[in-house]
Length: 289
Image (cartoon, rainbow, N blue to C red; front, side, top):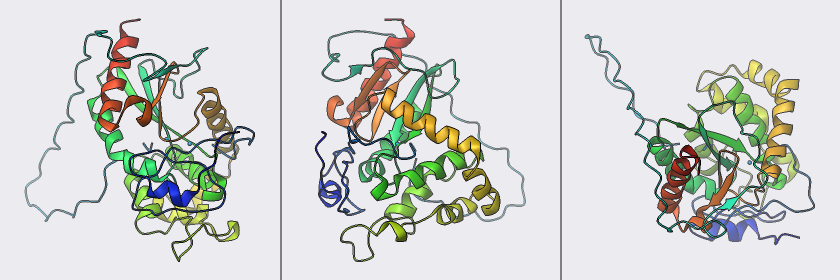
């Protein structure tokens, strides 16, 4: 059985990933170790990216001159694959055997973050995910898989909210705001108001609360709730849980490349190393190695 760590301890451990715990909560302002999925516990409702940047820019002053939008930055060219022995299979990354389906239908190389907005380590890590997404070559694409294996910290609700927002086309726009709603404003926090321990299950934030956050980005709350409880989202929740298990994910944040390789901050050696290793695996996959 996987070791359970208290959520309070998790949130106090810097630069580590979220860890599973059914009893205690941690501080929202500090990163915590990786959330480990319980071995015997079935997934609740499916974790991360959510993989985004923090803060909202102030509105610019009105201008009388119409301006054309700035062109989107071009994706960097793919780097040639060079195996200099720096990255070692079984040490820095794990090969998923057999290879599993991709999360999306893309024909590009897929980079997936398994995450939860309720994971303090994911909150600390998501600026790095933004940087990684910006540095991926044109033959690769970023995707996000929400996990649900810590229901006591409201991950199933946050997972369903993300999948609903994704279906409505507002997930990317609201990514930073959702992290902030959990860890800054506390409107979606699972922590007790005292900052010690977790709220009881009956007092955890609900999909209605999440809908209010997404409403700021164009989602109609009534439509959001209808979609959230639809057969389509139920199916997506089930598939998300199945993929988290199939990928062998034991903690968040975890990165999966093309359904074939799995890594995290610990195995890679740090946040910047995650970026370097993922780009190397993308080039490896592109070269067919």
